[in-house]
Amino acid sequence: MPDLLSLSGVNTHIGQYHILQGVDFSVPRNSLTMLLGRNGAGKTTCLRTIMGLWRASAGSVKFEDADVTRMPTPDLARLGIAYVPENMGIFAGLTVRENLLLAARSGEPDARRLDWIFRLFPAMKKFWHTHAGNLSGGQKQMLAISRAVVEPRKLLLVDEPTKGLAPAIIGAMIEAFRELKRDATLLVVEQNFHFARSLGDAVAVMDSGRIVHTGSMGALAVDEALQQRLLGLSLEAHQ
Amino acid sequence: MKTDWIPLLLIPVIALAALPFISGSTWLTLTVAGLAMGMMIFVMASGLTLVFGLMDVMNFAHGAFITVGAYAAASVLLAMKADMQAPSLAANLAAIGPALLAAMALAAVLGWFFERVVIRPVYGDHLKQILVTMGGLIVVEQLIHVVWGPDIIPLPRPATITGAVLIGDAAIERYRILAVLVGLVVFVAMWLLLSRTRLGLLIRAGVENTEMVESLGYRIRRLFVGVFVAGSGLAGLGGVMWAMYQESINAAMGMQMMVVIFIVIIIGGLGSVGGCFVGALLVGLVANYIGYVAPKLALGSNILLMVLILLWRPRGLYPIGKA
Image (tube, rainbow over all chains, first blue to last red; front, side, top):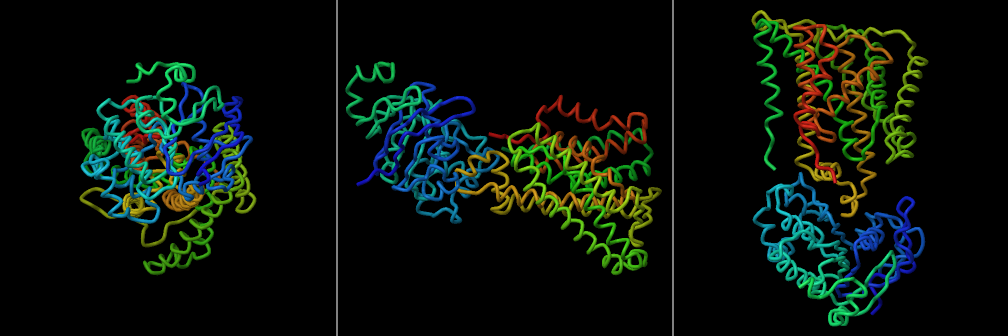
């Protein structure tokens, strides 16, 4: 089965800075691919380039074998790509309901889909009429993810879903992502290695704007020396 | 997020605070005048605050839409002088209706032209936005001189809305009551649009985070053009209201209004329609009370009000949490 998403020689400049310097990797269908790397490696830029929020200056991005490198962001979303940014991007002045209503482009959210979301994140039902700005950090992240999946999507791009979350919430988030994996293909940027190891099927590691390693998450999870070399961390530090 | 009532309470607080310094009937006259002035400023400013909130555009050319609206309406009204002067509401409405439509349509078309030709090339660059929109405002002002001439044009009010009604000893101009009602209708219509419709939801979301709205699959540019054109049309309507209030028009009226409009949208919180409404009423009331109690301070009263509000709430009365 061909990959759902593939990047080939992607370069991205932001102002005078050359951030992505020839990124090559692909995301297999029906899998969760973890994009790892140190701070400043270019992971967020990579997701934003895929989503069309920053333009690639060279190279190509293919989604379902179609070249989408120059496609505007709204068209990419309509193809079935959802994006959850690092800052979650929730609309603080809108209620939970309004946030989800906006994300359901075809009209009112499907009732069965909503029930599924409420099972994943019961807080969304509890705070249905609460303004998103009044939610806790974990609840905001749940809302951001709920919004991304309120309609079926083919690919979810999620940037650091565990950033700033309490350990108890991260446990709930791991369970939610296990469920999400059954529904869509995911590409997740993550710094929390425990989270990445628990969920990832495939992994790509970035450094200085390039992909320096690709393979299975399982292989990386058992190879401490490789983790040390690629990520500059020991496994113990992330347990 | 609960509704923040404190800024709204400022309106009655300021009105009551002025009461000890002004006799009852004069206070009532000034209060209605202040509310009418505030409503007219709100109609002119509401589109600009949405444009700023949605696309971060500093549009000084907004004043041109006010002026062009006023001139378009004046042309229609002066051509229908007989209907205007007839002591019949139906005849007056027969003149005012087409005048308002002409004002809003011409201002909207000019707004569309400005968005496409002047503003689109300078998205994301505030300095260039200020320079080109200011330049655009000056060009429109000069074109008005060419088309309508440089003189001030008198614009008498329709016969049925001249004069005043007496409430006790207070004389309240009929036109000011009408201006308050029109302003309220515009505010309620905008509030219903923003809070009860999907389009309003999209606008509110866009004001907070345009990038995320695009990531959800909506073409924000189309939305922006629509809001820009509608805001320009409202500026045209505000221009007509202001022209009838002043009973004359001149090519510089839009530019003169821009200072107070910017004060209002800064006081309200950039991008906030509710804040713009409260800010406009506060500016209208304070200008009228200060103008009566301490005329020498009248010129600076709006600036003083803005400074005090920004000291209290540095991002305005109803700040928008922009991402």
